[in-house]
Image (cartoon, rainbow, N blue to C red):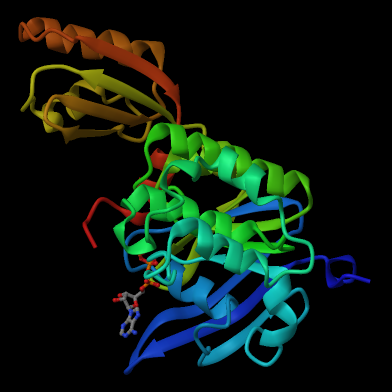
Length: 315
Ligand SMILES: Nc1ncnc2c1ncn2[C@@H]1O[C@H](COP(=O)(O)OP(=O)(O)OP(=O)(O)O)[C@@H](O)[C@H]1O
């Protein structure tokens, strides 16, 4: 009986610690991933996502905590897990000296019941560069090949580290379709991404990591509706006085709205945005002869929540 039928969680990480020198880059991280679900791990650069995934893949040895994949230890049971786990590394990790098609055939031969190479080649658009050596592929082509290599063996768990990074929109959609299909086939897909729309579209469960720990998790819906806040987005002349806007929108007894110029001429107002907020804001602009070229009010997006949780400072 496959181990996925024995374990509720295809991946279970408990109190994971990984240190480099005396610095813990993963610092007590807990994470679970279910079969038949996409778990998206989000976090700023250097948050510890890849390190965590690599501990799950058996590529790095934890300094503390426990990691179970299909109920097994990624290090000690590496041989048993190899045919059941697909891995797409951030840097490709593919042998570079052989043509792409040959590389994929070689990988497919390692599995008992590989996917059809014709079908994978067709859906990921690999045919046009099958004869090109891996080293000469473009970044996006190499990513698609790495994804094909990760899934060709029909894994029960697929770890995909930034699967659509550097891809054109067509490729990204092909990748998303494949990920959804894997999920529908019962695969536990664990992916990292910096693309909030990718997480919003694909993820059944989102885990936000910062400083080597999980700082929030849940479904996208849970995360974006955990507050009643709304976001007002405004396009107007650059350099408006956000402190003055904040003061103009203030209402007695209500927490001040968070007004920011997120890029030149693009403003957000976050909080309890009411009809009167819109009226006060447009009046404030009109008094200064400033034209709003766009104004929308909507629910918070995953990106809003992510920036709230992790801040705007560059890492
Ligand atoms: N072999 C290593 N030796 C020392 N430090 C390392 C090593 N590998 C990773 N780190 C550090 O560990 C931290 C976490 O790195 P990791 O690659 O896990 O982050 P990440 O969340 O995947 O980031 P990104 O979004 O940029 O890919 C970083 O500060 C990185 O510099």
